Image (cartoon, rainbow, N blue to C red; front, side, top):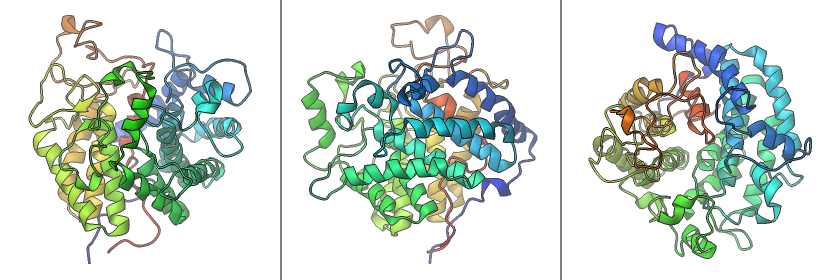
Length: 437
């Protein structure tokens, strides 16, 4: 009999602490409006996102090409998730009509079979599922699912949840161990933890099974992603992937056998979060042990005192034990959000509240610093030491910004930052049933 620590729901929690209470209000009344303007490209002198524009083109509402990052859709999904948490908390109700309208836009952009990705729909519909390493199709599906679950739980409205289920059903028909299915898995982990959330809110066990497949298949031989990369012969979406290796994507061995945190830090902690969820659902002692080992490798040897992780500015990755430079560290803001997610899940899995020390460390330092008090400036990377004159373009320090930025063409982190300010918003979705095992 193992007692779990179960997060309370957002709507049943009120934060009265003057610091964090102020940040929750800031998210509702400053961040949500500002980020809506950002993804609509209405922030003067800020890098353009093209996010809403891409959905309008994919939906056939305007002519055009896809612009921005290949995974730009996720900016909107993260924004919707943050809106949902605010509504559940009793704030931002004025944004519900806007959210409902943009959900209609998402539904219009979805293809009849459930596929939803503006880049491939607009630019290369014949190339779907052919570049799992870089394409981010499954990653985008994961963030859509998370937004849909949050919005359904906050409002009771099913439209976005139905869109997400339709896409997840297509993924389930496409991927798996069965003959005739693709035996691949995500290049960028995220959908795994999202599928667990979808299972918990729908009760559809095939979503849980699909999440388990994606984790178990990773690291199998022959190595799907490495073979895919070899077949591309250097024709990469991301030029930096010329230095891609198996550890970067945590595919060097099966996740259950991994003992050190390696590779891209965000991908890693998203995967570890899913592993912890699956360990709980399947009561898998081996998977739990792997999670505990990986957690301690991070916090004991590969984490900054701020809760920052991923010390390398090249490929945003973990390196080796105690390689923690102060001035050129990367420590992506959303990597610390992911570390919070993983740590909370470890507390739920083990019943040990000590894991919340890491949640608090990341929240009160890296995540807190990632956004300005006026909610209109953001850090993407979080060094401990900055020499402004040394942050020169086209150098090894080009990733370090001496001041927060209005927005980023590759936003990624800013839309993720609103979520930790609402209680357990970035954590696992509570189920209506079993609480103890």
